[in-house]
Image (tube, rainbow, N blue to C red):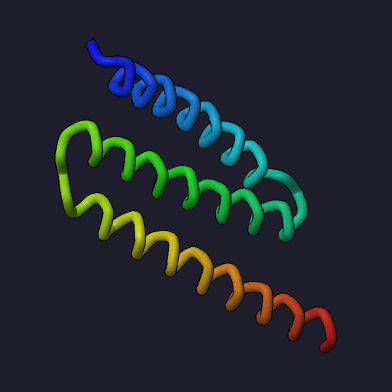
Length: 89
């Protein structure tokens, strides 16, 4: 096996651990920690898709990861605006 392929598999294993930690953060009691955990989880999934697509030469994984990143940022901003409005009311 090539060293690049081995390092990609090691990265995938570490990303799975990262995703488990993101789930732990998401299940915290505060809403802000849940928001941070879900944003972290979507980032981890996007990177995992990019690495998996690079290993198996799947081109549309890049498109899905990009859409996930863009929609994750938009969702985080929208949810923060809604929380701010509820806090002032």
